[in-house]
Image 1 (tube, helix red, strand yellow):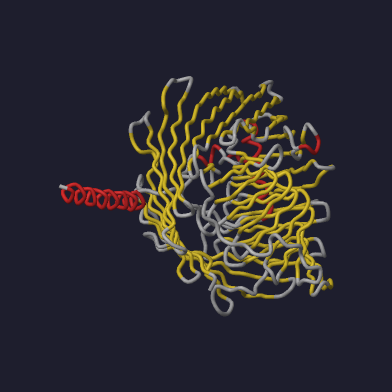
Image 2: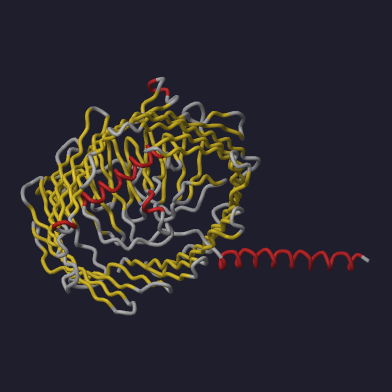
Amino acid sequence: MAGRVIVPDLLNRKIFHAAAMALVVFAALCAAAPARALNLHYTLTANYIMFDIDRKVIYCDGQVELLHGNLRFQADSIRVDVKSHIFYAEGSVIASTMKKSAAAAQNNPALPSTNPILTDIEETGDLLDQRIEAQVTGMDGASFSGDQLRFDLDRAAGILTQTQSGVRTFYLVGEELNETAQEPPMGQAFYIYEEPYLTANAVTAARMRIYPGDQYEAWRATMWVKGNKVMSLPFWTNTSKKYTTGKWRIRNVSYGSNADWKVGANVRYKEARDFKGFVDLNYHGDSSNTYSADLRQSFRMNTQTSGQFNMRNLFGGDRGYTMSMSRYAAGMRSQTLQMDYDLSGAKGFRLGAAGGIKKTRINGYLSGRRTGSGDYGQSTMNALVSFDGNRKFVNGNTRGIGYSVSSHIKMDNYDYTDAVTAAYTTLTAVSPAIAISKKTSLDWNTTTGLGGDTEGRPSARLSASARIGHRPRQGMLIQARYNFTDSRYTGNSTVKRQLMLYVSKSKGLKWSSAMSATYDIREATISNLSTGLDYTVNKKCRLRTDFIYSLKDNHFSTKNFNVDYNLYGTRINTRWFADTNDFMIDFTSNY
């Protein structure tokens, strides 16, 4: 009798474990979270930046900002290990996401970007426009504040710690900075907790940009050898690390089943301290088998000013020319100028400037563009000035309720219409996590804004968000969020009231899963359900899945999967967007 009971029980257990593993593998193969392309860079600005060439560590102090894709990190100091792309931030840390603009949101956000390499002024202007639109329309993403943050940019995972009124830890994952139940898998970083050597081989700068494959760019750079100043350059980029031998570099490789496949490389035809030249070669394997080539030539004007000349489509088509110059001074002050022209007759310019008064950052630009000719010509003129205040605290240094004030003035002028000037000011208040019990905490934030334009249209916004989290046991998080937004912008009114339930479960550093449901209070409906899985197979392979089911349309609005594999230093990223049946693969290498 005992054998009759025990044997079926063992069989049932084996069948259960086998079924569970099959479900995990099936979920990984059927869908995945959209992963960002591997060629994303990150940019650092601060009052002081020092890059230790020997340790491969960047030390940043004073009003530090790190931008990576749609992620934005602010802190008093940040230290980055550029080998592992892990950074440690300390002091008034803010981790937030920047939503895509309305125009960009129309495209599939999961697809990798096909835009050419942006110049310094283009990148700065685009990010500024994106932040301004989020402030006015209420497209703000997730936001967390604390005192210390360790974040892995490759894995999009981090640990944020609040130390006031007790210790509170947040585990953040993904480009949307979702909170998870347990510490996510992260790489190892070295030297980021140690003080820099004063006698190091280093580069100091006002701004740095880091690319995959150990490629660096620095503005207003000063070279130091064993602690001794050697030279000052307005712009510096390293050439010691090459993907291939000689003057060739493989820039990117990508393949899409519903699109063309692409191979990009550049040839370094000039290598001098003040005069660097590259030819970018691209092949698009579509039906026309298109080849294209662009030329980039950098030069130096003085110790603070650098320039770059770009020529697009050397082989024909709408050939274009761009001249850009950048000047970086002390105290985060900078001036940039860009002029462009193409054979279709379009021409334009953009003048940008940045600086600060005490702890308030000031950024702005003036741009103009003319397209067409004669009666079909059209001219545009745009200007923007933004004042972005640092986070302050009501109770001084006790790190209580924090607040910040941001404002901007924008002018748009098009042919056949009158110029429109708009002004807007935003006040944001954020509280640290309030401990209700040892396992439960509450935090909130609120934003109010007011403005108007010269056509008599008012703009106003009031939004609030409250979040309560409960950890019933290790490896599990239950979270409820309430979001309220009431905004009026250019005559359009938007009111949203949403309640979200989020459940996350993790098992060590091996895997984590999450489920969430969003309830629209105004419409009294559950808008969508989502679930995801992040599974680390081993040190080289990682699987991520994600499903989003729309109850309004009764179908899966998102069903993707991603496999990230490290093959002897070469990272291979494979993605399948099941909705469009689009398979994509790209890679980057240190060789």
